[in-house]
Image (tube, rainbow, N blue to C red; front, side):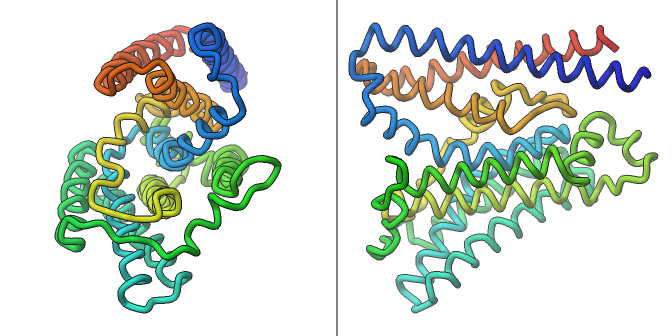
Length: 323
């Protein structure tokens, strides 16, 4: 009975959080409609969705990690390294496109595995472990590319030039990824284990869950989605380079936390993360439409992150009081 009540309280908290975020989004949209008549045009909304694809893809994987109580700040560097190596092999070393893409994915999964093993098996704090791989991967892509961009063949633009229901295929790819991530978290044993580890790693271990494997799996998922983000960014820009994904980790963590995933672990949903991505993307879109200097974009997002952290701390206190 107590567990049932706790589950009901957690579900109620998540619903309230989503409704609050929806209200914020609604108010933001109303303000932008007043300030910029071009905001609600189909061209701008479609561009907004396209611009948010990379952030959404990265955020899906990081959601898994943060639910376990971890953090992954290496995703931007993994994105850059995987894309640059895979594309270079395709363009300059006659590797088939499918083979190059598989190598991108393998790089992402491998670095994710290294992160997971460092955290789960060797007890290295997640911040330190992923900071190290962030630096190593960023340095590796600089060395590998000699600080130069690699340009994609024309075939890579298909996902942005082909449309379905008015939206380019690249948007639908992210929709499919989000649905898969939601199904894994909400409908599978792995998903339940991720929540259990985030709620209490010791209790999960006593319940027979192989916590080390679960933690490693979440970092591998994060690395995999980072590699997918690298591929999608390459498709969008028709190139890959050492600056790809630089500094994107801040936006990713902000989107995930704003979406209701707790930095303390144990709570979070994929729909919430998508709402957080939309809000972060709206901020950038508003800065562009209103002609605000780009520096303010970072300032506003920094403020949003602080607010998100405060809200998360408040949600955690409320959750404890309900138990």
